[in-house]
Every structure is written in structure tokens, then in C-alpha cells.
Image (cartoon, rainbow, N blue to C red; front, side, top):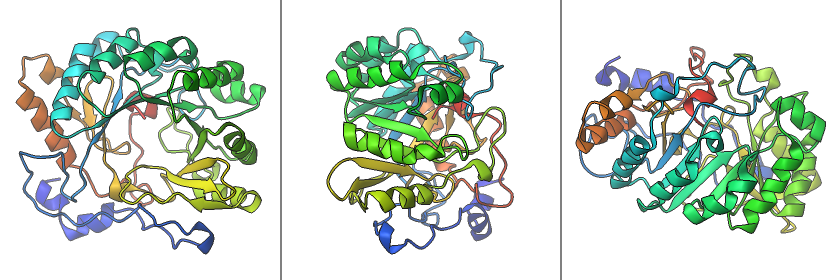
Length: 373
């Protein structure tokens, strides 16, 4: 499809996800999940910030440093995952170079993901190298199975905070969902992370109907008793086994209703904030939760993220198969200007929405662990 075709009203209507449903009174938050504007111009800018044709400025870069993981979560990886040869992954010099160019284009936040980023050797050194580039926020999403020993070195190297994935507070169920690992290890790592200053600590929970959705209140109590922000994430069509279905998805709205009925919630209003999670505090002032309703209430309208995959491809959306390859360019003696042009083209090519709720939606060929969360 040509750029001109992509920018027509017809393609805009086709690719734009359904607008957010009317917000009930109980959920009286000023939504940041707005509809993208129509294309502001058909000419890609060659200077200034990384902006797409709908006016969204991209200042958040998600860098997946490995497709490997020491767990096999049922909603992410299959037991027989095939990983890419190590030589196909970007080395740290290449990652640092892309990050440096991105920083020069106005990117201020980095999030390191995987797979599981802490299984990559030398990750502390990578954080130190990225920290020297002047980013205001360097975060990491981790399963925390190796975090306790690395928390202090990572903090000293420049990591600012961590999001920890934890889908059950019941040891046997945790082991069943993750197919590996130990809940006690993860809970202990949370304590260590906070003790060295990796805060605020966020806990990511993917709810699966009939598997762990009966723990919503348990996680709310956990948020209230620990002060950690628990974020409930909708199950997305990015699992390696291809078993995703709407029947297994627990909508963010259902989570809100369940928690609000026991402990009334109120929105955390942050004018101008751009983030995937809607934040709510408990009205009695004890604790906070977040809702990431990627499927049922898309936040594409304010998306400011682009992703660098482990093998060096730039993706402007989790749910698009369109990629802009950097690895071969980096290994062929390119200039920083060449890297900049790829980043600009990737962002400029971004569609207004992920189209999950459209009839013609096709699942991406690559799963979450191969792309990076």
C-alpha cells in the first residue's frame, strides 16, 4: 500500500479501532485514550522530533535485548520455543548506537524488555552505557527471578525502576502459569528492588479467565498492603502458541467493577500524561492500581512508543507485521544519518490504530517474546 493510499479517509476509517465506550459515572476519569487526528500532512519531516502523520510524538523506545526467557508463561511462550541464533541479535555496541541516535531525536525514556532481559549477559554494563546517554528514565520489565542479585548493580548503573511480572499470589498457581520459577523468589526480589531505590515498583498481572481471574481482590489487597502499583493487563493476541481468544480475556472494565465494589476507586488525573495504563487510587488513600485495556479500550490515540526487536528491527506497533530493519544496515558501515532515516520512516508509517477490533485483523506472525513488550 502506498503512502497516499494509506492516508485516504477510507483507509483511516478501516484502520482506526472502535472509539472508547461511553464512560460510566463510576469511572469518571478524563480519558487520555483519544482518537488520533487525521493525517496532519503527507510530507515526512526530516528535522525535529519523531512524529507520525497523525501528530503523535514518539519519545519512548522499548528495547528488547533478547528473545530468550527462563520461564514459559502460558500466555506468552510455548514449551518448545525456538530462539534466534545469538549472532542474529544486536550486540551492545549496536544497541547503544541506536539508542544514541534516538536520544538525539528527542527520545527521553528507555525500557529494556525481552524475553527476559536479565538472562542476557552483561546487562548491567548495557544499562550503564545507556545511562551515559542522558535518558531521563531507564526502566526494565522483568520476571524478577534473577533480580535480587542484580538489583543493586543495576540501580548503581542507572536503572531507575522496574516492572515485575507476577500473575498469581498462590505458589502452586504461579508455577502452573509460568511453568517454571518460584513465587517466593519473585516476592523477595520485590523487597530487594525497593530497598535499593528501584521505585515506584509496579507489578504486572495478566488475567486469564478461569485461571487466575479469581485473584483480582487478592492483588488489590496486595497493592493496599505493600504500596506497590498493581497493573492488570488484558490478554493480548501475541502468544506464541496462537491460543488467544476473547473468551479468555478479562476486560479492564470488569476488573474496575470488581474492585470498586469492595474498595471505591477514583482516577488519578494527570493532565498531559501519555501512558498505556489508566491509574486509579483507592478513595481511602491506601494504594493504587492500573488498568491496561489494550484490546477493549485501545489507547492508540496517544501512543508514543516504538520498539527495537532483539534482532534489530524497528516496529511502530506491537500488532503490526511491518518492520524496518536496522541490523544489516548497522553491520554494513552506515552513518548515524542512515539510522535516523530508518527511525523517522518507521514512525511516519504508523497507522492510527492497531485494528484488533476490526473484522480483518490478522495476528502478528511474531509473538510478544520475539518482539519485546
